Amino acid sequence: MRISIFGLGYVGAVTTACLAARGHQVIGVDVILSKVESIIQGRSPIVEPGLDELIAELVQTGRLAATTDFDRAVAVSDLALICVGTPSSDKGGLETHYVERVATQIGAALRNRSTPFLIVLRSTVLPGTTRSRIGPILEQETGRALGEGYDLLFHPEFLREGSSLYDFSHPAAIVVGEARPGAAKPLLDLYEGIEAPRFVTSLEAAEMIKYANNAFHAIKITFANEIGQLCQSVGVDSRELMHMFCTDTQLNVSSAYLRPGFAFGGSCLPKDLRALMYYARHHDLGLPLLESVLPSNHEQIERVFQRIVQYHPAKIGLIGLAFKPHTDDLRESPLVMLAERLLGKGYSLTIYDAHVQAARLVGKNRAYIEQHMPHLSRLLAPALSDLGDSDLLVLGHPLPDPTWLEHWLASGKRAIDLTGGQPMPITSGYDGLYW
Ligand SMILES: NC(=O)c1ccc[n+]([C@@H]2O[C@H](COP(=O)([O-])OP(=O)(O)OC[C@H]3O[C@@H](n4cnc5c(N)ncnc54)[C@H](O)[C@@H]3O)[C@@H](O)[C@H]2O)c1
Image (cartoon, rainbow, N blue to C red; front, side):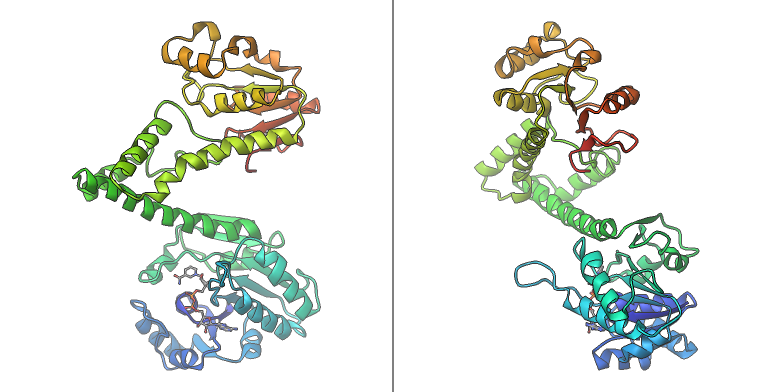
């Protein structure tokens, strides 16, 4: 393919060389003349292991060129990758004026073009930017609507400085967001032969995944440092500890617990976090990440409550009361807290939990429920069908038989699912907390 790459910084310089190395005809563009000259002379404009040698070789073959002339770059290519910087703004947001300027220049250069062109934004931008800012600029400058001779994609960049040549050919995932269905095909063709999961999604999801990834990476580092602080204060070697931690690929380093749904609870997580925070305070350890966890978890319960209020339900059916399915353990169950909150505001509530029978509760469970919901036995329904006269169903646990829910929704009633989503057809009246 003939490709132009706008911005010859860390991302653009590597992408320019790696695509040329895969046999494409590539031209790099930058407003800084010295970066362009550097490529023309066969040198890398940035420090990156292996890049100098690769660029020298590719410039010699004639597959790699560079220019400051935007119109020429667009004229000699069929696909443009925008890799210019998006630095932090004064208020912590994102400066998009470099991206907008490049979109303006590409759009103007496309005005009289009759052959198809694909514009791919690689710079990191906040969700919504590609559709609401870049699309309209291109439409205005070209004088044509998206899809009329040109298309727009968002394609997040995941490479890491220092190992970016390797990362280019071994990406963890290839994600492309489309403005119009089918537009991603020519871009995906560039990755032919590269093994990685491919996701074609909306522009916004492609923009968001970059932030989800980076937020998670940042949280991982901060978590390791805070655990390190705790380890040091008790004389434990944090390197050995984190090695043991990472060996657990079932629950720790895995997809476990990574589905948005509802708050956590139970007899362990809240109690142990509280104890850890108590210990940290008494040893003057500042652990802002860990300290924020319980308040954030509590917010989730309040958010569900507010969401339920918006439905103006006359009668609520709650499925599940224990802190998770397949147990009768009610201690610190977020569903008990939610039920308490709803009852406190005078809502009518019926609860069904296959494993919780008021008469059978003993020990800590009985004490907990007597303190929080002494009239539980009156609210507990023996069968799912007893929830039939409710107009809003709150799914705190998954239903063993989703067809029951389908019938429920078919009767025009509503349901909110806090379980992280059962595989259900998209039906009106069926919502999740975050989807
Ligand atoms: N550096 C990384 O490891 C990395 C990884 C993933 C994503 N990103 C994202 O990729 C984008 C680029 O990052 P970077 O580190 O390569 O930035 P950078 O600052 O190193 O490079 C940006 C380049 O764009 C050029 N430029 C600015 N305006 C231009 C214009 N109008 N026309 C042509 N060129 C122009 C600049 O001169 C500069 O050379 C950012 O949005 C960044 O957040 C970076």
